[in-house]
Length: 123
Image 1: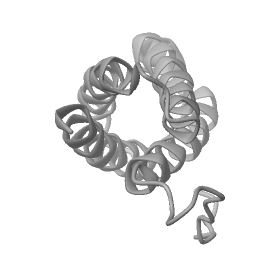
Image 2: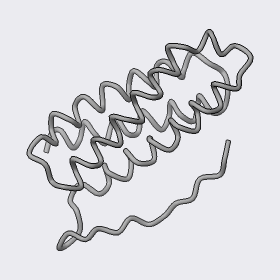
Image 3: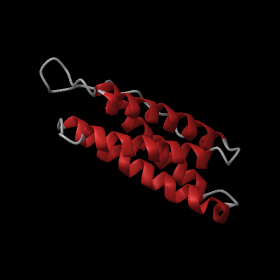
Image 4: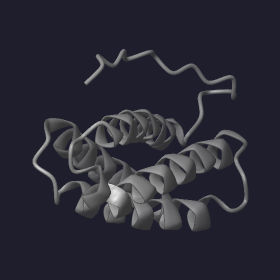
């Protein structure tokens, strides 16, 4: 897997964005899902991974969308974070079906993102 760089988040909002921790978790999930997607396409059993690959794409897209909603302090943050958490959990379950390290890392990242999104939805 490619090395990931931790780039410090900077918020333009006064006193910082109260959603920053969740935004960061979502953006990390986007990156890891995209990397896992790419690596799954290169595996010998790619056909067995069809459902996982589609879920990786769904997860990356909803996480990106959730980060955008939080960045603009949308009135629909709770709803989008709830669906994001659900899809992240589904993605983690799909990735857990495979033994590759990239899938394990992705599953862990998705679960972390799901937790942050559930916390955000409760705010």
